[in-house]
Length: 175
Image (cartoon, rainbow, N blue to C red):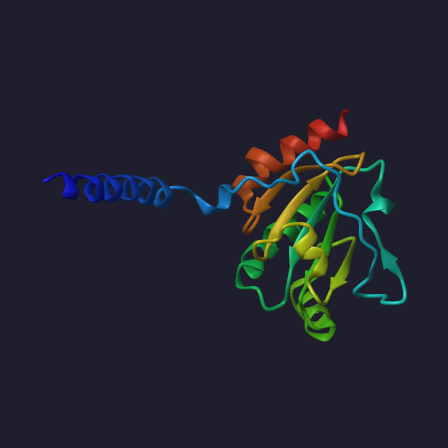
């Protein structure tokens, strides 16, 4: 009888962990980069590849870094939300075009509109790795000191803008 108890207890423990794990929201994975400096990079701009963009250029400003790609289905869902946000001019949105062909990205922005002040081209995806990108789209709120204050995994929605992103942006702009 005792030889069956240990495997049964192990099974119950494993089942409990699986039950808890399956009920977690994968979009709420905490980022180890929150409250840390945004990883430095210098990448060519999508529209003007002879020019570079770096987060250092943004010191003194609160801004959003949106990781996107022309091949990303969820990016198409969030695009109208970003276009509306860009028209409101509440916070500058910079894009990080992730693992994409330049021509495809430019065509996608030409068709759907361009909400970005500019986009940097992360063709090989190395910068995305530095930022801990799980998949596109992802959006980061970065403060005036270049510190990441929030990470939105998945598409930005009207609800996430109103409940989390814009209140945080307003708070950071007033500091």
